[in-house]
Image (tube, rainbow over the protein chains, first blue to last red):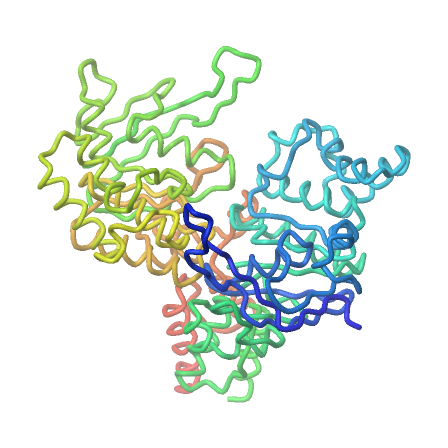
Length: 286
Length: 286
């Protein structure tokens, strides 16, 4: 059985009228099958309101399915008795770092999670050290979070989740409020956790450039998964993505434009280096 | 000349142990009708700077002129200034508070003391400009998507008929199409109405695509000021201060380093495509 396994997952937001009757139903997730293996790096794309955040909130049982099933690490998330196991398996990081930090000192903030789980004091400090080091924030352990930059705060928030030793981290637009360097810092930290610590990652983002490192990309629209594949396969379909209100990385778009102008380039070029390489080869063959 | 800033400095917590210089001797002139991008890492002073332009913050020293008039002069009409210089904060949708979209947009012009017919006419016009038609008028702001909410909030400012529109990261958290829609509409207003627009952004790609001039802030000072081509030529220095350049710049620089005879000035996808084709074409002639 896969690490995360969803079958015909449905979630409906219900709007109630004053008498308590159901006024309208909005199906935000509509029959999604989801298969994630341990150690995968999955990116989820989709326009605002496509259902990606709703889906993500199911992974750690903040929401439970209205229909279908979801198993995380073999546990059915809909069963009340599994809720703490599920939440310990999957940690979440949200968009705004300021809403996620509660401690007055960085190391205390990171220690809050394991303390709540009843981890012995000595081990809490070990976990604080290892998780701050894993996101490159160890030297700020005595700092006050409100003196940090956005990217640094977001990395502290990630360390807070890492300290709980989750097998999986779900990040819902963790870089939306950050400047370019902050964005890079956060993505680098996430990739390191995935590659070095083998933490399973689900990343939701509107920045197409952040997706190119993923093993697999899911595209959502109207609550359904409408495309899935490697970044290269997904970003080869420039026009189709635009139809879903999405985009491709600027480099991919440039390569696509050059191809339309008659240059024999391959589809799905993702990085500046790849494009430079391909163009140089083209030139030497001319 | 629409806005002129002369030797403006501002310190937070002046006279306390926490005094921090947020603006350090800034001088800047912005002519009527210009589309200016302001970039800088988190904490570089961008937001502090723009709040000075409509008198929300008062400089510790220095002068600001609007249409040649000193706004710190005794008896200067700050109220009038605030209606002429419209400021759209980050996440402006958090400030929607009325029962429906139309009433929310009416709030500003009604506060100007305009007659009801004029207020409604302006609200219609502003909602039309941001692409929210009649069907949205009576909707609760809570029923709108992220991008729609943001457009409703921008309409609230446009209904004040500002001469200068300042937007602080108007596209953060929006999907790519939502981002394009908002920026396209802003660009159209700037062209058709001759409105001066200041766009604060963390997206180098957006800035390169839309603005004619970029002001780079770092540590409370202006580090670079010029056309996108000129500013992004300093991409190495921009990286050092938490920024970067559009991906196309890296492609062209990479090509040049490999001996590709390409013009490295381009900052948009179209320009880069043409530069690359030209470089390859020239080779064909040889």
